[in-house]
Length: 488
Image (tube, rainbow, N blue to C red; front, top):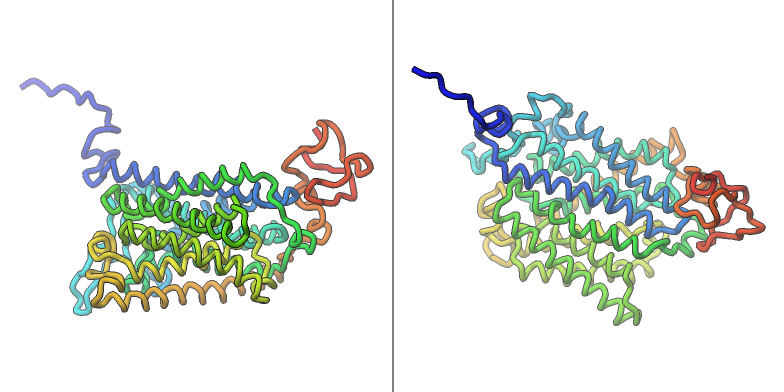
């Protein structure tokens, strides 16, 4: 009998081979990697650009670099120990066992979240373990970019005065002792996951935690200089809009990737995300016009962000009309806390949250979590949640209990981040000051990094205060610049 001719298809494309195992769904895998890339682009370059342009010019480099550094540091910490603490085997009801996610045998196998099997009280399986149809490598990277953006968001609260060396210590400590706790508790198979608290894509794990932790860190670091607090104009509003645009469009991966599949629920999540963001932006702008007589583009960006944040815990769990309700409330409630309550409450004025992360992420995150408990639609819940028959309060029955679960889950995240972030800040301050020196606070980027965002005089010139005066944003220099952008 004649031998069969060799298979003309390269082994990389043959089904049933190590490169294309029988469990692999190429569509799901492609969407998961695209989603991860979209979320990564939200941080780098999205928030790097937004932070570098929304702050005063003298802090442009420092602010952008804090975001860039945080993202890079998280990647390494994540694959060495963070991923398994968040999505590995159970160590405690709120924590997974630490370990590396680096070996080939681990990363090329089918993805699974080992602590996610849901059981009835009598021991029968209610919902099977989460086992997406793509390799563990895709899952590790997808979850990594979520961890990265959480630290980048948190940085927005302490821009313009936190020591960069202290930030270098803060990032791995906060990832280890705060982020992994929220991620395992709500997503990785912890006690809130099995209790049925709804957090579709990070309203609590990412936004509430970063907002509370950022506000707490801002307290311990202390405020910006008096001059900066009085006058802190953005150095490039148009570039800020470019960063905001990357953030908005990247949210398709942020919410659309969390079913771990390119399925119907993923499509619902993406549509609801955009409906809510657009509604929230419009409402915030209308409120600015009504009460302050001028439409603010920075305000519009804040409204966009609060809309994206508030829909995140319920993106694939609510109907389109509910997304409009989310948007109306996310464009008005954080607006009220930021523009009215903040100016009348001495505590909020005392703590210098540079970019208002408490309002745009913590307030919007808990708001979205509660609204999810109210509007979660039963059929959509059945597509995603481990607890069967889950539903929001407006659908009657046990739905009212869901609102209480959402409040309790939010309370755990708030309490943990308040306490542990405080401990981290106090511990770091024993080794390296949390705050920059007075000279650095006065000068900004040139003193901290030896670099400036823009060259405001000719190439080859050194700064001369008798000829060049002060920067347009009132930054003072008492010596010749040594920044790379000034000395060419």
